[in-house]
Every structure is written in C-alpha cells, then in structure tokens.
Length: 99
Image (cartoon, rainbow, N blue to C red; front, side, top):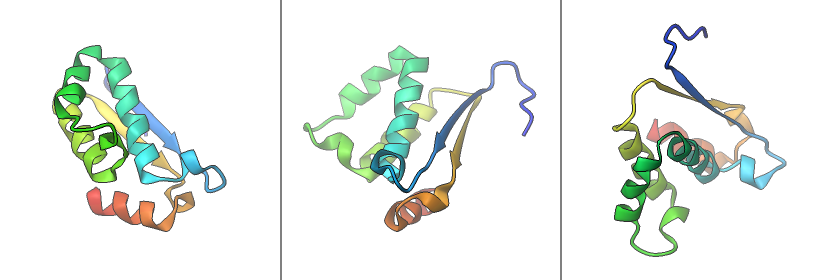
C-alpha cells in the first residue's frame, strides 16, 4: 500500500503466538493507544476522564471504546495488524467482531 498523503501516519502491530504480549487483543489495542498518545499528548485527558478504577485498562471492550474515542480527534491514521492468525483465538474473534 502506497501512502499518498505526506501527513499520513501508520501504526503497525505484529502478532506472535509465542509471546503473550504480542498475541492478545488487549495488547494490540493498548499498543495503538500508546502510539496515539505519543503522537498527541493532549489526548491523555480523554484517558483520565474515562478511568473508573485501576483495572479499567485491562478490559478489551474499554480499550476498544477508548481507541475509538481517541481516533475521533485525529485524521490520517492507518492501523495495521499483521499476522492476526497468530493471536489467541478469543483475541482474533474480539478484534474481528469489533472491526
């Protein structure tokens, strides 16, 4: 895929079944959120406004909701998940249903 726009930003996550942190849906979305926050520090207020308790970030559904809200404030971002087949089956299902 060739990116035509100069201000296009690509975030990629490469899954690996032999590494727990690289084979779960929560890790994938958390990685994308981390990259978005590094891109725009002002987005951090969305996280602090959203957190209910210290376990909030460990839920896929909450992370997905946060990911969608962060993306509403940005344009020109492309997200790539490579080797999704190497993710845990439950994670594959969660991601495909969310997409």
